[in-house]
Image (cartoon, rainbow, N blue to C red; front, side):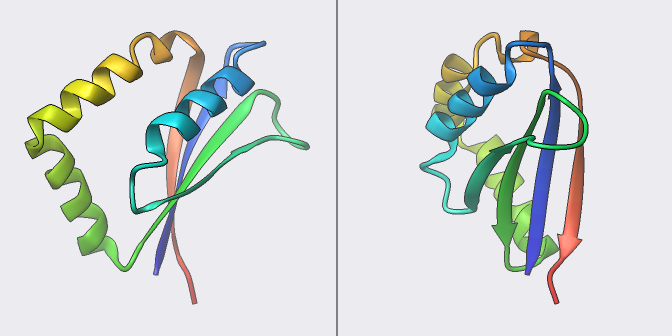
Length: 97
């Protein structure tokens, strides 16, 4: 199994807003697991967690999203302006043993 953490470092005051937005938008995704916010460590972090059977499933999921024009249109509408809430981000992919 593969676990993916999409990590966003938010502008002050925006972490909870972005977490709520991700939770609302991603609940329909079968790969979505949870959204986390920091309690220790670096401030203003939002981490979106998803899981896949393997890296092939992860790549397939991206391709399916890109090729689904209706889904992409809905996602863009719901996520409009989200990039104004964060400063930077990263992605970590883990192999679960």
